[in-house]
Image 1: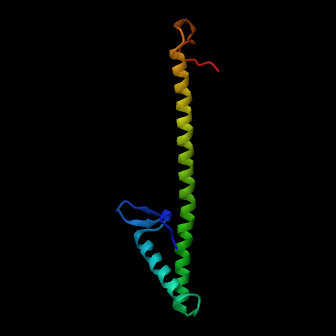
Image 2: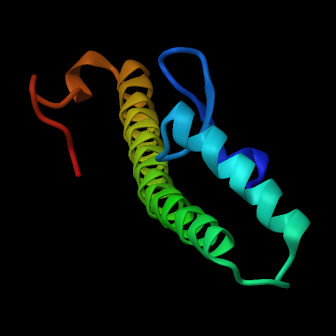
Image 3: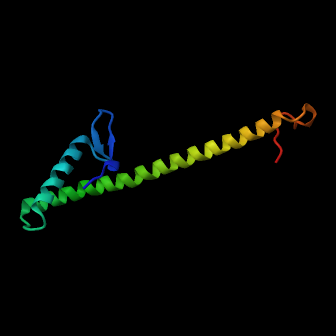
Length: 112
C-alpha cells in the first residue's frame, strides 16, 4: 500500500515508513500483506485486531507524512527565497561595480 515516497532511511540505516520505527514498519508491512491476502471476507476477532492495529499504524504514518511534507515545503520555500535574495543582492553589487566611484551610494546604504 505504501509507495517509495513514503519511506525514509533512519539513523540506523533502516528503510522505514515516515513516522514509524523500524519495528512498526515491519509490522505494518506484514499486516498489510496479511489483510490484502485475506480480503474483506471473514471478520473473526484476530482479523479485526489486525485491521485495527494496521489502521493505528497507517494513521500514525499519514499524520507524520503531512508534517514531513509541510516541513519539506517550508524548507524549499525558504531556500528559494534565500537564493532569490542573494541573486538580487548580487545584481546590485554587480551594478555597483560598474559605476564610477563618485556615483556609488554612501557606504552601508542601498538605493531603492
